[in-house]
Image (cartoon, rainbow, N blue to C red; front, side, top):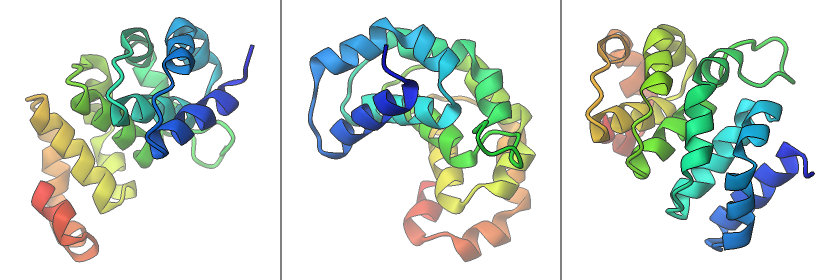
Length: 168
């Protein structure tokens, strides 16, 4: 059994190189429960991002992300003890992947909404733009998230590039 980091690296590489590897992605789908349970949020985010980038629907993988959404958003990378909460880039990549594949993931988005203040404070403008885009694409109202974007608008506009701001 492959370890989640190796698997995530392989599918991420395939996506970066635009190589569809049907057998590899089928195996990730088949073993999605173990992959998400044993892997950390970065590995999971990389895998769902790869699926979205290659337009590979992976219902079992996304179901597992939804099932473990609270851990995914709250825990973050367990190798980084100082950051006991989800990394904004990992969260943004996961919700972006859901939106790209038009997969509604209510529990995942509810967790983002619940932790919106921390997410917006710690996230960079691209993370924030990708996340609010995902909400808009899936027609998910997220008043706390959008309220936090409004609250931190000056910082967001100062630090963001024009494309990120336009997407928001």
